Image (cartoon, rainbow, N blue to C red; front, top):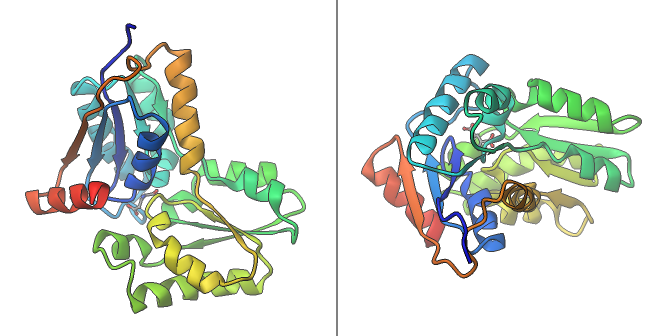
Length: 257
Ligand code: DGL
């Protein structure tokens, strides 16, 4: 069977996008992937939108130059700042962005209170505001920055007392306000799921990671654009960074180790 064996590019400011990469890999085992974790400019979360847009352009441009057939912007912050620009500039290939999973949270809440954790840049972006206004009618949407979360993940300190304290600091007020859904609006945050679960305990709160939905979206676009790899193809996994070799090793260990 014929197919398109060019890789799919997956990009993030750093290591967080690996939470999306691993889901794409799980759902589409025939597809080769090239993961680019900028690393040099991470975190993006508090940078001005124009600067994030320039960084995203450089990153997506390098994946397109490498011959990727599709690019997944596995970064909510870069999506918020640049998705329109990227789709306009790289018209020849599909560009998939991260949607803040506010919709499923608002549909599932029983308490009427939903918590959203993301970076400052994502939360003041048009995409979040529009989504929250559209689905959050009659629902209290509490948004907070996961202060320090990205740094904890980048430094491989997810499993530490500092991580537990940082997560508790942000999560406890949302839980106290009655949130029964917590949306992870930054791709770094799912690496903190074990400590998030520890803080939540048995309070019956659902944590929503949008990565599986992004994986399904990738599948729809592969079909719609006729881009699927040949069935049973041997998938290859490449890793790139704008940072140094040490960071690249850390990235590969986090992905495969
Ligand atoms: N992982 C990114 C996101 O989804 C960005 C984190 C950062 O660089 O601040 O928003």
